[in-house]
Structures are given as structure tokens and as C-alpha cells.
Image 1 (cartoon, rainbow, N blue to C red):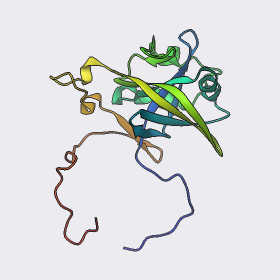
Image 2: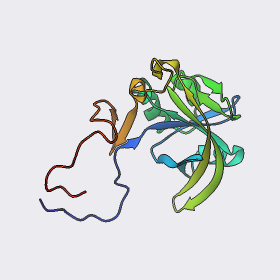
Image 3: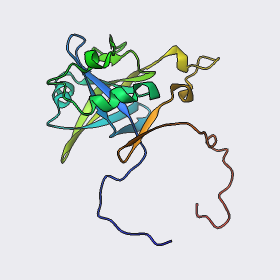
Image 4: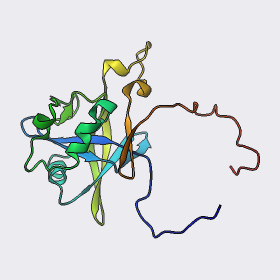
Length: 191
């Protein structure tokens, strides 16, 4: 089948859906971000890319901390809302019925209802045209007891996490296999 060429764009899917909490416990804010990921495993580093005009950009710049709260199926409506309104005019925690809880290793609010949270401390800021990338050290991970298996390890499948692809949300579900256990590529497929 022929491939059709398009100009360069932000076509990458699926993307994680996360609610980034920032500010203070007394004045907390949430911004929904899809432009995030892991940069390194040792030391553990992540990033969030935020436009300079966003209210959260100033809060993260000023405080140097934020929390990446992973979004479960139960929280996806809140994430959608928090991505459409500004914290300048809205108290998103109150309006969404969410609980701002003090982080364990950062002086920044985390979302108590999120099944998994990465507590982050900004290590560097990289200007990238329309966005600044806040590169951060992951200084702690908070996991709700409901996502732990019988051995006390995190089982992300239990979190019913969501993804975003071209204007639509989806819940992660069907497991195709474990790393290294999917077998050989189909005959004729390039590796």
C-alpha cells in the first residue's frame, strides 16, 4: 500500500494523559498534559512541555516542582476539564471534587485520587519554540494500594490508565504480551 506524505506535525499516538499538579497546597493548580514522557531511567527523569502563556508555566517556573498524576479511567473526565479551563479563573481541585494532598518528597500538591503519581523536581528548562520543556528528576513515586499486586509491586494494569490519540481518549486494556515474549517477527517482516 502506498504512503501519502504530509508536512511535519505533532502526529504521535497514543500519548499518555496526565494531570500535572503544581503551585502550593494553599493555592493548588492542575494542568492536563499529553506532551510528557520518560527521558532516563538512572537517574529517573521525566519532562513536561508547557506553553509559556499557561498559568501553570509560571507556577512550575517559580517553584521548581510539579507532580505527574497518571489518569485512570475514573479521572478522564476531570483531565479533559482541567485541560480546557485556566487555573487563573478556576479552582480545578474544588470544581472537580479532587483532593490536593502534600507530596511526600516535594512541597507541591499531588492529586490524592490519582492511582500513580511521580513527584518531580525541575533540573533544567529547555526552550523549544512554542513550549518550554521542564526536565525533572523523579524524586518519588506514589502508588495507591489498589494498584499493588500480592507481592506489593505496582501492577499498572490495575490502574486502568488512559491514553490520548488525535482528539479521543482511550483506556488501556488488552495485553498483547510481555517484553521479550512475543516471539519472532512474521516471515518477511523487517526487524
